Image 1 (tube, rainbow, N blue to C red):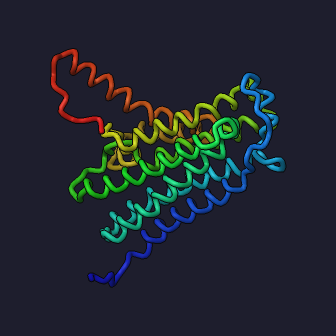
Image 2 (cartoon, rainbow, N blue to C red):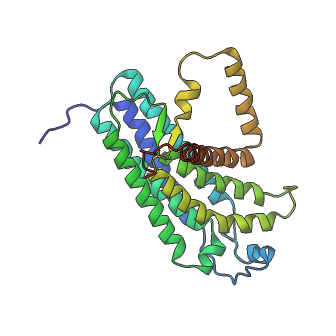
Image 3 (cartoon, one colour):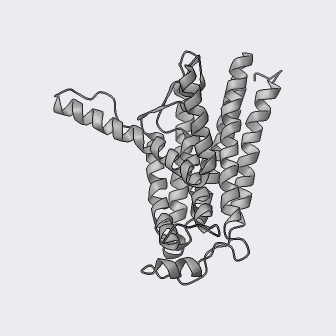
Amino acid sequence: MKRIRTVAVFPTMFTLGNLICGFFAIVVASRIAAPTGTPVPSAPTIAINKLALDPSDPTHNIMLSGWLIFLAMIFDALDGHVARLARITSDFGAQLDSLCDLVTFGVAPAFLMVKMCPEFTYLHREAPWIIAAVFTACAAIRLARFNVETDAEDDHLTFTGLPTPAAAGSIASFAILIYTLRREGNPLPHLSEIEWYLGLFLPAFTLALSLLMVSRIPYPHVVNQLLSGQRSLGHVVALLFSVVVIIAIQGYSVPIICAIFVLGPPIRYAWQRWRKVQAGQQESEPLF
């Protein structure tokens, strides 16, 4: 047996911060009460009122759990960068990172998804939990494949398949959106109907995220492509204004950005495959 003699302290603390955020995201989501009312699928406004997630605070736990997952994404992005900058990467750090990612980006968002769909959960008791289990299993497969197929020579500019943090962030963005819709003083019309349909759409979207994680569709590494190396001053100014806009309307901008990141590469991939079929070229790379 080969014993570990030294461990990189700083990157390990970031990795464990990722795990702790994921753990507390599950704890906070577990506070959300199970639906007990009688839903009326044909009348979304009535269904929302009868299926409040928490009689005392129906929105805070959803929002807090979602932001904890996003905070974990920051820790996850920093631990790898810190390790590479300090040149202290190790197999121990890689394995620990995957274990933490499975909890934070596999279990936590799957559990949160079930809690965010009270109408769907009430109508189909087992289906949300089955979908959550599929999401968690696909996240584990995605992480294991990444560990096996990635080596030190990779440029880290693209991913094969949807990264698990992005999949988890997409689910967490719905938590932020639901909180924004339920907030007092929201001027948008038909808020109850919008939230009702979101609750029905989210389980199907979670299944799609599961398939995209284990697919071989290429996804960009946003942090490395936008922030690494030297860029023009215009690039920096554009990033600055983008951050300001995201912060100003975070309740709506975060879900939109996540949806674009998740759905953009599959649409481009399908278009390229269709072009190759039209041109009579053979497609050698499998989808899974």
